Image (cartoon, rainbow, N blue to C red; front, side):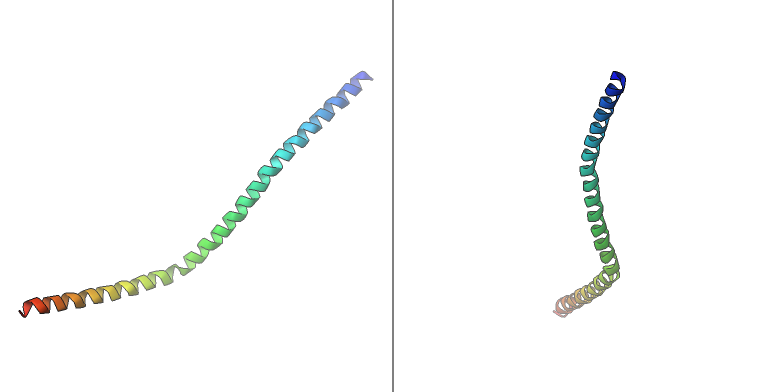
Length: 85
């Protein structure tokens, strides 16, 4: 009878340890879940940026073309001014 009682007490201790371990892991699982949600939001934002990339490149190209036209016009004015002295 004492053997059965000691086995039951031992099982109770094992279950208490298991419950403690589960509680500790619950916090870790919640943090992982939060990190996954944050990663999902970051991925969605990155996807939106990638979809905008062709427009950004197009605008940069137009801006660069405009800048080059402006630079050429200034250079022509400068050359015209100093050559015709």
